[in-house]
Image 1 (cartoon, rainbow, N blue to C red):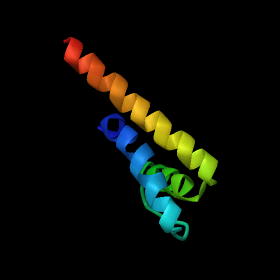
Image 2: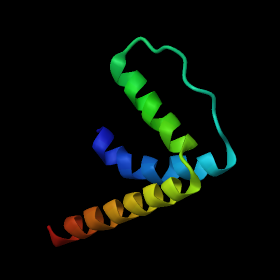
Image 3: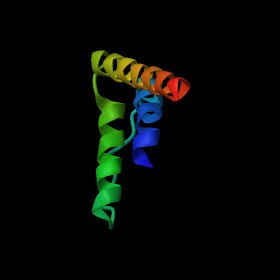
Length: 72
């Protein structure tokens, strides 16, 4: 499930990060949820060059996935 949402997160979170910088997440009970929170925080706080690369990777991922779906 997370792999289907990951390209969208790679695009959306850096765009939001251009305008908003959140504070680090507090302690979360589950390690899986903490990893997701840490990843989201990372995408919010990377420099603009990293955000641009993240957006490009997400867009390419979506384009390749849509081309693969059209072939089948």
